[in-house]
Image 1 (cartoon, rainbow, N blue to C red):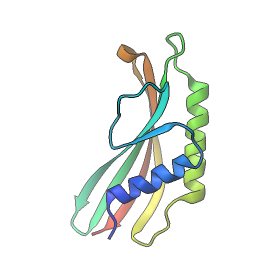
Image 2: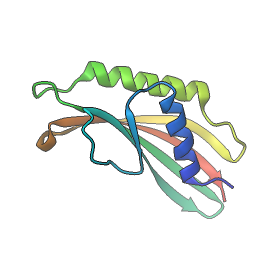
Image 3: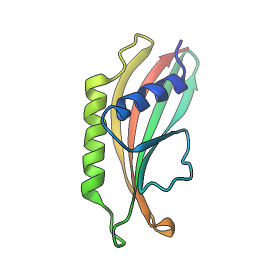
Image 4: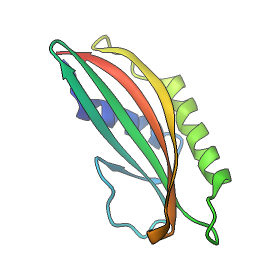
Length: 125
């Protein structure tokens, strides 16, 4: 049986192989870094089959009040390509795949924005 924290650890290892950004598991931490990544999960249990979604949020500072799309696009492309190349294949994970891009979200009060990527998988309980 696998747990969500193991899947988060695997995603962090995959991202670490292609990104130099600081990666925080579960929640955002205080940092002086201009850019960083937060990885967390949402699990929905339905008896024996558990669906989980891992959120990967790539944060960066605004540049003169504007979204840094070039940076975000490069980082998200690296993350998705690394996932496709190294995605977990353990038999306990069923259908581990890149689900969607949740969009780009601005946080004007802190002069930042982030892009949300979602990876979905199923576990057998």
